Length: 394
Image 1 (cartoon, rainbow, N blue to C red):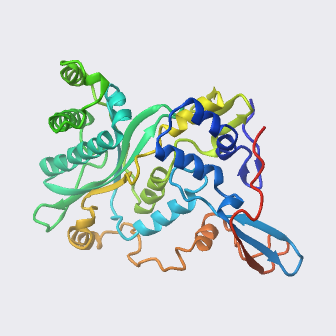
Image 2: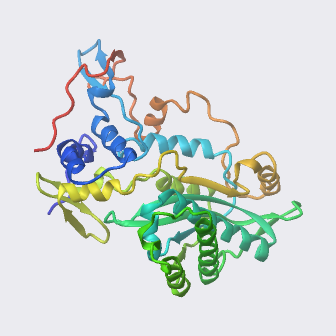
Image 3: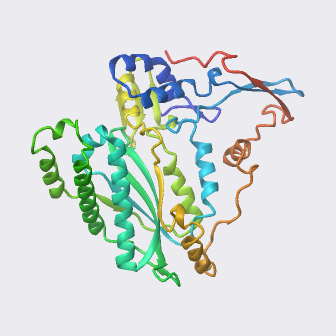
């Protein structure tokens, strides 16, 4: 089966078409949470007349081009490019001009059922345990306060449930006295075995605390008297996986690399290989593909909808919000003399953060110019539902 062709720079297939064609059937067959139903509605209406938009009119050649508004839902595969670019611009003032490591902390497979039952509790526990592990090792081994940006992902390449946290970590930190920058080893941050052991212990301790507060009342696996203790024994015997990559040397590379993770959804439209009334085929890894029924595909996609208001990008240590004007600025002043590329501290202007400017930075497209003759266009606002939505598959 051939990869999808692209038309006008866009993938041939669209998850929104699958949602519009099979979303109602999915809702009849599978109980959906309120958050999942809202995602289905948002993706189905994204960039259609349902949300309104505008009409670009070229007074020179007469070309007319309608553009519909995006849903801006964080789970929509079509709404993340500009959000990602905005995030990168906003973070430029905080990135430190040092090497950074990429460390991945994965939730033990024994906890996946509990994670699906109480996602907010378990995801928060994973964030806390991962960040505390890194910060504690920074203090004990470097005697310094390091900086961490962590991003939660919950999927594998074939859309199965697999919670893990990607952490971008400074290769060193501000000394406890605040008078110097302490660099880590150039090739590794901390031993992965030590990080895995610490992570396991911290997660288990936090689970005991949650259980004592009756947070797991109603979870079927814990109804037997020994259910929780049996799970704890399994966790104690398991080896927790922590993965670390070699460091990045340039601060600007760190932002671009991290941007790929911060606003990624379970599956992008570009990975769709073929879509029919009965099957959805998408690429996984190493040239492999997976084929599912549309209902199973949507079910896998929607299991990665995060709890409402859940923050999936978090900053710890030097990069925590509380340290922006304190320890982070101290570290920046200490690092300033180093001959290392750093980002600008200037705050981005409103114009730089406009969607037109960001789109131009991403693909060079000037939305105020006619794509046919290059003349200036006049924009006319389209109210919602003034035009029919794009045709669904089938």
